[in-house]
Image (tube, rainbow, N blue to C red):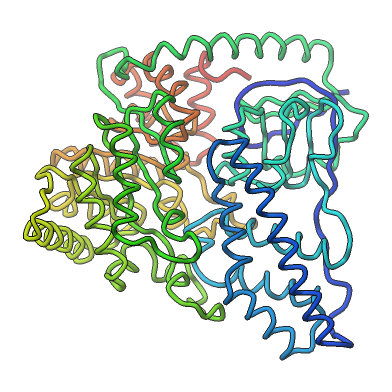
Length: 573
């Protein structure tokens, strides 16, 4: 009898193949106190050196596979080569008389709690865990489960899969990926999407039911996994797979057309971007611009912030790649931990509420001003817009705009010509920004709703706490009303609005956002053409009654059922 599990779709397509269950990676230190501290220190140094060598090889393999460096592997290399991190580990070992293994566990715990990196980067906790497991594997001489060991075509099922494991997989053998844990924003999910491997994450229990002698259907479109499917289910999904392939081929025709609803509303579909190397993929994806260019990873290479000239070169590269398309660049959005070399620095008990985003930029203008100058200089070569993150008060944003004006004047005085039409906007990620949006619209040229953070703060939910994550409901009427309020107030002041969080790529939310009058969706590059196709078949006017019904409901589940019932042709079972 078949068994169906639901999760989060993390890679398009449908596949049917035998199951391969990959063991969990959960190595732990067997003891705490060392007999010989010098010997333990030597073992720890050897482990750092060996893992650094392994990561270089994995990084080279990843770059050859993807055509660009992978940010999480680059971050792993940065952490393991950071002298401050190595010194911290040695100090912990010597001062506490610990074994090398126990030191690694405590180091991982310290790094994961360091401060707001986990807030600004959903990848950080997983990166540090991956590093700890690799160090423990060497110290304990126990292998980590590796998808590279697969010797036949199969659906790989695991509790979790790290990015370093993903880049080692053989695309000819891995038919699909399914995990217990994970989320749509995990870097594993982003990589699996780029590899075009059907993937479903956050099934919360697939490893309990899956065995190597099973067959599985993985529906990476709707987020479903069917173990031991019936002949009827196999036949149904084979037909769906064929239909998906045909639709994908037809989508290519949309690349050179404007995105318009059936009643003529113009909507831009832009791409999210985290690394400058992604611009080549984005230019071929059908994107009508870049709605969010995250700059924090670029600026943190080798634990150093890029100089103004280095940043300028990168922004110029991106701008010239899409000279007629708007590139919205978000200024540095990290926590204050990256400003200090002391890894024991404590950013408080609630880093999500600490010094991050624009707060950090204003407190450390030696970081913000060079970035603003670099962006203004690069705007000569394309259509660059500047966007400030984590804005909560009018005073903050007015100060940020003043800095832009001051740096523009300074560049002009230096004889550097700057375009007059560089737009300056802000992220809407806090309830304070939502409620004051009419006032912000007096100063901002545009707004971008960061639905991930907005939902986190709206529902008072820690996105890293599995006990409360279910309360974070993107489709909840409270969230819908907040988004609608921003769009209406911004439009009243003649300003345009984008949405760049997960909500923009949530299939069931997109008709509601279209009905609200959202001007731009900013989504991962593989969502571009499917979203353009969806919008081209919908009428903004005809969706208005559906939006009003959704706003009057009690919870997210009711909203989802309403959309699926009202638009059955878009949401097949």
